[in-house]
Image 1 (cartoon, rainbow, N blue to C red):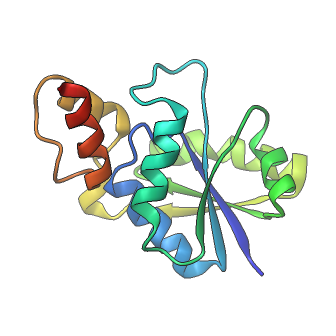
Image 2: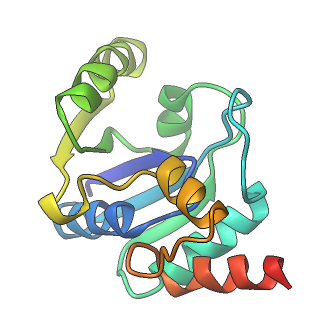
Length: 158
């Protein structure tokens, strides 16, 4: 059985993430979406909300589960979950250059390989940071995020 981990903070999860996760689900028997917390980041949604939004959004994909990554190294999380693959979506060469050293480190630390899935061109401009900025300034992000994200944003606005 091929079990892969697709890590990220998913704050918020967007259609680019969904597309990469769906493609990973078609390639591997099981995909664990590992929702992480990077303490250097300022989050729009708390961890529990990000987990709930991801679970609600990804129910249509067979073999996909959503777990909190917790503290510690991604390589250790993968080992604990019995996963030997990490899936990372890349939008550009800058993403690839950023991810490549981490992929090498994860392979050396835990023997975990990283598979890069290039973003679909129609999503390559999306980032959670950009979407938070656009939404914060009153822009319509509905074409770029799942309904669960819009629902939470609307709840918070009232």
